[in-house]
Length: 178
Image 1 (cartoon, rainbow, N blue to C red):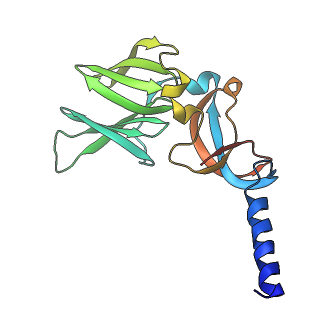
Image 2: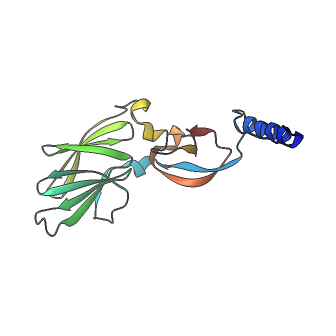
Image 3: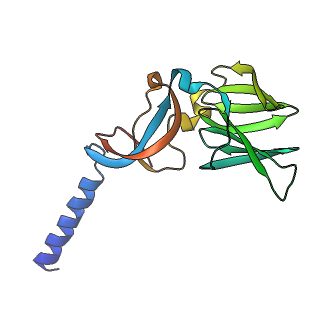
């Protein structure tokens, strides 16, 4: 082996060792930052229909189709005429990523709470709310961006409910998924 090959192998080894250093500090990185809602922004409300964005689950209960918009709430679509479905309302449920229906009740997860709603005759009523029903291990989307590998800004629960994540340049990120 020549000196150049030995030097090259040593240099490559040093670079690999440095890049795997767990103490390596990252001062700037592209990552995910939580979007928070607090106070009145966390209220569940019934409003006009709106454009679809980041859709999740779907449930049909005649004559309505309910479509989950991740972290935001539920689109209500009147499907009385399946050839011409009509968006009729949007139920704002901040932090909602999962829901189901049984009878006239909508059961929705909002952060760590589970809320029961009744939607009938274009009216919405909050029937009950079980506060902190889920623990942190059951609501990972409230502490780690879902389906993401890389740096993210650590969640600060004192800032409110996480209602989404956005890509940003992070300064001195402390949290990371692998």
